[in-house]
Amino acid sequence: MTDAATSPLKLFNSLTRSLEVFQPVHPGEARVYSCGPTVYNYPHIGNMRAYVFADTLGRTLSYKGYKLTHVINITDVGHLTDDADAGEDKLEKAAAEKAQSIWDIARHYTEAYWADVKALNIRQPAHWSIATDYVPQMIEFAKAIADKHCYELESGLYFDTTTVADYGRLARHGTDEGESRIDPVDGKRHPADFAIWRKTPPGETRQMEWDSPWGRGAPGWHLECSVMSEALLGFPFDIHTGGIDHREIHHPNEIAQNQAHSCSDASGARFWMHNNFLVERSGKMSKSSGEFLRVQLLIDRGYHPLAYRLMCLQAHYRSELEFSWEGLGAALTRLKRLVMAAAPVRDAEPAEPADRRLTDLLGKFDAAMSDDLNTPVALTLLEEAAAMKKIDAGQKRATLAAMDAVLGLDLLTIERSDLRVRPKAATIAAEEIEAILVRRKEARAAKDFATSDELRDALIAAGVEVMDGDPLGWDWRLDN
Image (cartoon, rainbow, N blue to C red):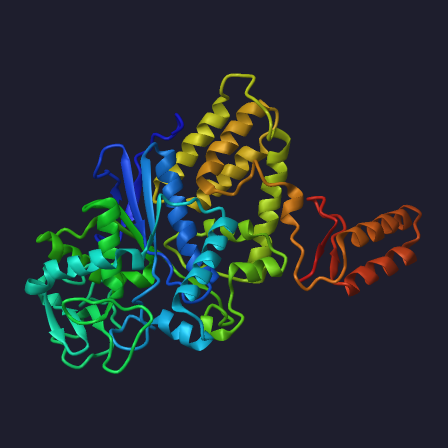
């Protein structure tokens, strides 16, 4: 924690729909659980916004001086095609479609997700909790709550939501703020009741199934997170994060299980925090659309993945964020400016006492991040620090480093040339582009504008955008 990190950290708690001062369960510690991916397909960039948010939260907690324990789960079993309690398991479905082992499917998409985590400069959590590693604990958890809170049907063991106090308060069920999309299952006592254990249907064999007191089958999706968060963080822990879609069904069901297991009204986590949706108007946010928007597609189109991270930070995590290629391009330009401003001080050491102007900026930065992670304001303060002139280079570097430790843009490590990503479809080599540009500059210097225009047109035909007079000094970029 820097000397400037003095503002009390206030976070929006979805459980109370209000800003609350963060008070850790264990003094000096912060324990955070984030709902991770279901590894049946590649994550799209909307999925990854949740982890940029969770990473920013974790970085802020570290900056504020807390010892962070962050857990992200990997769901490799039990998640159906939606929040319903009947239908195909996503992993089983993917394995059948690709004629592969479900274990191979899970490993492939887990590694793809981890690659995206690395590309977006998301820090490694303390634990990656793999759902299938915790099935015995899930069965024990279910056994502990079954008698008082569950009932058995032919299809599995179900949780009776009327057996816990104030079910659905996180989602505001029964109010205009809440919503529900649970499909009916024959025999359920109440529409909101949900599966704790799903039996393998008669005559079927699943690749992932286990013996249990309720028959051979697999755990319900909601059970996994309750078990893994308790096992690795203990109840109660500090913060549970996820996308706003989890606020309506998945997280209320987790809370109900946690209440049942603890025999109290405790929700398991003190704070429940949710990021809003990434909106994309063309329909390519859906994985059913074929070439849906994923981090690798951004790279293939010539955009550095940290431009997407910056794009996420430009909006508050609780606000919808609209994706467009133009917006991503603007975020890349903004990132270029920051990298260029940081380059001259990258290796500088402080030679003078702290400058009051920088100290004041750090105080404002801390206040912004302490105000429910106000990254849009924090970014403008980072830019203000980067643009400062006539100031000790070492002090400037220290200020940029402190701010970037929270925002995670890698400003003091990444090179300007790293941000020029070659599109996958490009057919012209960078060396060839540079050679043509040298000839074009010579032609312009000789006032041979006909040759200059001819060379420019040749580059445009090859998909190269020539950026004359670009204030950043970037002479060209490959068009997407």
